[in-house]
Amino acid sequence: MAAARPFKLMASILAGDALNLLDAIRMAETAGADWISLDVSDGHFVPTISFGEEVVRRSCQETKLPVEVHLMVSRPDDWIERMDGCGHHQMLFHLEASQRAMGVVNAIRKKGVRPGVAINPETPAEALITLLPYIDSVCMMGIAPGFAGQKLLDYTFTKCARLRELIDSTGSKATITIDGGVKAHNARQLVEAGADVLVVSSGLYGSENPAESLNEIRRIVSGD
Image 1 (cartoon, rainbow, N blue to C red):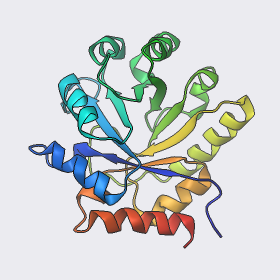
Image 2: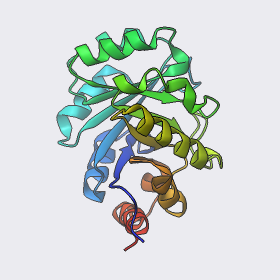
Image 3: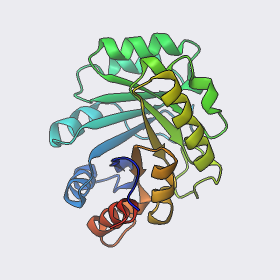
């Protein structure tokens, strides 16, 4: 049986070669990714530090794929201005990092960028109810953010299904993205639970054949 809904694959270039991010972008393009994901981390909200606005700007210039900026930062408000004009299509911030989430959503949209909200594994889907009608995407972390190579948490499937129920019941148009721990063996179950977008990181850049790794996920989810 085929997957219940169309889905897209997003490549997180943070898992690529840190000294050759352009190669990581080209690898994602060649492998057939639908989106590029740029994880911006500040060393405070998560313990790692990745990259800033100049990498975002240059990445957007170097690819024709849509680019999503995932802010894993303590002060998301500050980064909206810093990223203004970089060329990204979508910007996510963590609900846990803001005391004025609706204000951040509105500020992102005013910049002509699609706003989205990310939630950590411990945050229930219900915490997003008031925001769902106003955002374009929900990114559900399947692992603790900031630490690569973790296994997808088992309750991600039921949490995703619950979020899908809330989106449908509120009439929201928000898509669901799963970020962290996505592999070929769990991708179909995630889409069946309600996911629209799967972020692939080590599953792509840790593969000897990146194109085949993404093709395998597409085949498994599509039931081909």
